[in-house]
Length: 407
Image 1 (cartoon, helix red, strand yellow):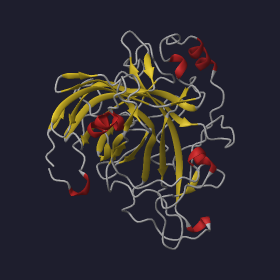
Image 2 (cartoon, rainbow, N blue to C red):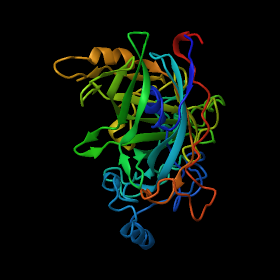
Image 3 (spheres, helix red, strand yellow):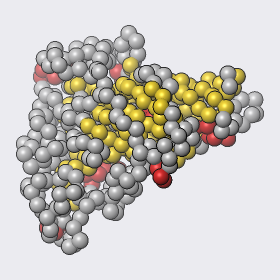
Image 4 (tube, one colour):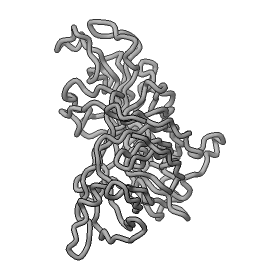
């Protein structure tokens, strides 16, 4: 399959798969009370515990210039669920297999809540840095992806990993201040109708609401200690960390034009079911760290997935879940497309839906304020002049195609 290259700006020509996965590729750099990079080196991380905000932070929250702006009430209160928060950007290079296009885009924005509270397990109100040097430290768990053949049910025989979680709220900046929280993108995209006819449409991608609240994407990181543990040494070809960004997203299409002719899709033309998003840290292309950023991807062969179900209350709603091996994003069929009794859902699905659309993304580090500056999301730090969310990282190279597809 020959893939033509199409370079798109921040708000033009993004295929569904490209924007979908790019917008999830956000992890963060701790600021404020968090120091160093505990995920990169959990054995050297000092255990930290964060309870109530400091008086200085309380004053900042009380006098937040973003209060009253769009999106303010859709984001968590600063320091209510994590150590710190800030804004992040990333870039991506995706292949939309059905449209036979190679798409690049930057930047995509998100609000990152780094270091989700993890202690106590039942109702977390503070954060303790996971370490695998003592049984008294939280979130040191059996490695769910790699274990020696000699491992048994005895924890002393197993390889371990320090487990971290972070929450990410996609957002779309609004001119004049504020943001559409939950919206990954709203852009014109290129499609192919009936296999050959060019088409365009407006694609809106968002995370779902549950009981009135946006559901964040979750970034998971398993960091492996440098010292050998378990019944056998860990081989050098096993990466020092595994990272997974995942969650559910909804795709909606509107303003469809097929060969220049408008087609009314109605107001509810969207994927019948939310799409499952899974983006892995790409240790082959470079050293990925949740704190400093780096390469991520969604394509065949990037990560083996979990050996079995996750098994710890620290996984929360993911406890008992089995994570499949890496692959590209699957775009579900569309439903409720058309007006006046015309069901255009099969046409839209033929243009936009399909399996295993590969993506590469590059994430930058967080630009942290201990709050999300909705009044000016792109503002630079006063105390760190070189720390700015823009420009976004450079666009990565094209991801590999699945199933041996040609160039």
